Length: 489
Image (cartoon, rainbow, N blue to C red; front, side, top):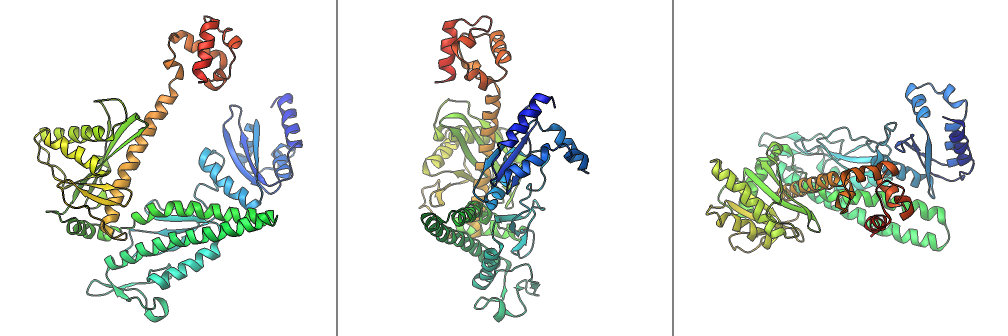
């Protein structure tokens, strides 16, 4: 590194505070290559710029990183615990190439459930090593978590990692050797489907417990702050943050707790609960996604025997109009999908699920009737109360919150929602990569390139003044004033 920049960095290090926080090391083009935390920022960051540091580092990877550091930024916080949480968030955001510790939430305990087990158990782990398992967490305080899992076992009769259930000749399971000591009033010999019900109830309790802790901690934090016990208040705030992040993941986690051993059972149950003619072994679900009418797209996901059939997923751009009309968009994509299937002689699915209420369901039904096609079973799942809406005029249906049939519907609906949103985000990202100057009338391709080349980036161009813009060949004062107004509305 040239002497000038090196001197500037040393001066920047000299001004660092003796406070806890997080630092971001950057390369020449401003990319974050490493994120670290420190109890004392000045002491920690200064070690990176000591002349003897590189000579004493044994790992080639670390030596290479030291050569690349061209600048750094810091964020001060109130405690070491808060720095730890922020470090993890920034690593997930920037994904620096020289960070490895936080890619799997290794610093906190997680609760892991493997849906491939006949009877999924609650296990503790520090690593997300299995993509097939479901995880709660991370939890910042292990003692609360361990006590809660013990309470879950006693209250709901679920299994922890120390259990060794035994399958009985009649297909049921014996959970524990000593039912009185482990699960109290709950039956010790149950079916796998009954256990899934218990699992769902335990998950809801865990979510509720998190909310309860959250309320108590917020009260304690306010009291500590009012009494000017700021360190204690900051520590409580860190715990609140960890619990909030845990609670936000719990709902989705609960919906996906249908183990592989009983997917077909759940499909059969769904037929009975919905009162439809045949088992919905093949289901397709539609969702619409847009940002205030822009980038309007749709998704279709397919499930087979209760499991995602990802090779059959489809994405749609809305072609018949521009704007914000979910009903019209739903009619278009449903019509396009099944008109094509009809023309190709392919069988329709056993059940179509629409993400939405009566309006969306009516639009989907209209897509069939307007083309003279006989629709299969068609329902909507309205988000507010997870109400099943029928297309044939039957009264809406609300299934029990823990019913595996409802969780299967939620799973396919959530999958469609995620798939639609990811397509929308992909289009927006692609559009943002195109120059915003494409929408500015009066500039040709050559002038656009000259502007971007002159200023180096769109952000610098946006901050440019009129007199700076006129320095670019072909840009007069009138155009420069219009461009400033366009870039800074």
